Each structure stands twice: as structure tokens, then as C-alpha cells.
Image (cartoon, rainbow, N blue to C red; front, top):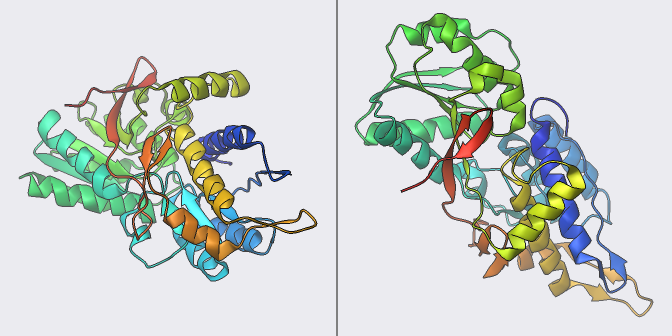
Length: 348
């Protein structure tokens, strides 16, 4: 909710807000949102998780947004049996650790890495790729998957370099990469570092080398930070959901209420709405109403209900969770900054 990547948390929270407005009351009790800022970090993720599990009125969590924060928070929620539905945490192994409370309504980086590598090799025609990542749970994991798929296609990864997040000068690593003659650059990470790299690559002779990144840089913040250097940059991200009456209604309400189009701040406006509704539907299945009107939501039962979600029709399509908490498959697209705005490129 703060910093270079705050647009993600703000956007998702706004999607959740609309979901709660639509839900109204259940058995005389309103659904309420408690939005906390984990700053996208593992430390912040653990702190927020500890805050939430100690509050008996909190029964489910939409989140966390980023994979590092999510990974740190999962064991805490698991112990307390507080269910999670992330709209955006895509690191591959999050669903491979055996946790019963973690679910996501976005596909994993298995798919995103495939899309990135195939686009670079087949569409851009690059056979020599330099990869940079921020060393984080999300950025490095996606970079490794992109490297794996790119080499399997017959491409050569000429560099695989980590940078330190938060710095303002990456010309050193860019200079060393330039000497290797890459035909494209892929960056696994987030907005702040992506904007610096995109801005500085021209200073070391890489002006004409395409810069491709991930959904960690998608949104208006990257364009604002990178300025003119944002033009022409590519990223992979969750594809815009197919048009439907429900999506059109959501889009109109979102823009009217928040003054910005759905999908402008991040690609996860619709995913936040769906994540909240998956939890709401689970609550309706397991809630117990006492004689005095008190509403009880058994945490463990809610976690089981969410994990058993099947055939739920959300804004983003059908949501069905498997035994590991993967509730979505595929659904990534390539975007490019054109005339100062992200534009989804047509897929084959």
C-alpha cells in the first residue's frame, strides 16, 4: 500500500471493496475489509500475518500480493488455519509446500515464464538473451523459469545477473551485459528497479535492445518512473479478462468510484474482486448462526470450503481449485508501452 509498488495493493483493495459492496450482509452481518500494508516484503508479510491471526474477527485473507511476502506469511496462517486467496502471487513453489490454507486465482510463473521465453525467442527473434533479476522470491524464480524455457527453445542465455533492490544506478551490470551482445534483456522483478534499468540501458549502448519484464512492472507507476524510457518496453502479465456483462459493470463502477480505469494501476483489479468472492462463497457454506444471532465462521472449515471451490464463475473466468490451491491455469499475455500506456498485444 506504499512505495514504488503501492499501486498493486491499492488496486486489489479497491477490487475487494467492490466485492464487499456487492456481497452486502450475510445473516444480518456485513462483510468488512481490514487493509494492511506489508510493503511487499517478507518481513512485512510476516508482521501482517501475525496481526491478522491474532484477531478473531478475521476469517480470510485476500493476499498477499507479492510472492516474498506471501511465502513468509503462509506458515503463520497455516498454524492458525486462516485461509488465503492470493490474486497475484505467482511464484511457482508457493503451492508446492503442502500448505492447506494457501490458494491463488492467478496462474503460476510456470505459465508466465513460458509466455516470456516464447515471446522473446519466437516473436522478437532473439537468440541471445541477458537475464537480470532482483534476487527475490518472485523475480529470481521467474527469471530461472524464463531461462529454462528459453534455452529449451534453442536460445542462449549470455548472462544471468542479480541486482540489489533499491539502488539508483545499475550501469555497472548493464555495461558488463552490453559486452556480451544480447539481442534482448529480460528482467525479473518490480517497478522501481525495472524503471531504473529501462532508463539506463541506453547509456551503455543497449538503446535498441528490447527490454522485457513481468507483471511486477505493469501499471502506471512504471511509466511515471521510467518516463520516455518506458516507451516500447514489454512485459508479461495476467491477460485482461474476456468481455462480459459482469466485467463491463465492474469496470464502469470501478472507474466511477476510484477515478481510474480497472487494470490501469495493476492487472489485478478483477482478480482481487474474484479472490474476495471465493472467500465470501466459502463463508456462506460454513457459517454457523447461534440462537442469539452471533455468526461463527470456523477457520479450518472455511479453508476446506475454499480449497474445494469448483466451477465458480468469476470476472476472470471459471475458478476451480486443485488439491494444492492452484485455482487458475494459463491466462498470461504480453503488453507493451505504446504512446505512454500499456497495450495488450494480440495473441495467436
